[in-house]
Length: 80
Image 1 (cartoon, rainbow, N blue to C red):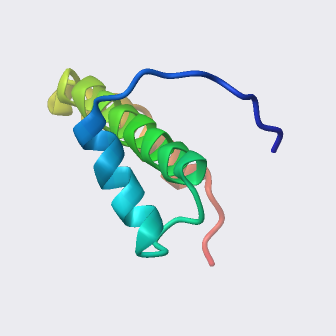
Image 2 (image 1 turned 180 degrees about the vertical axis):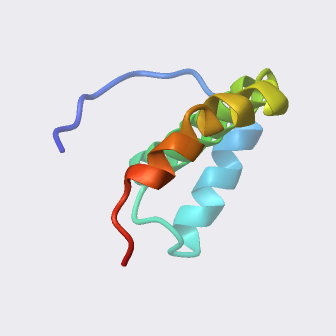
């Protein structure tokens, strides 16, 4: 994966915490710590969006849609 250099402004307290992680060898450098943090945040946001969209679904309607015509299909399937 290619990387692109960016300049950011970050709160000094947050930067001190990142530097602490680097000092404890949790991350090799600031860049890697920030890359991991941003990637994890984006993944959490995407999972949250999926949960939000799923909550909008009507379970009864979805079940009825999934089972629509299922009885006829079962008769046509070969028996194992």
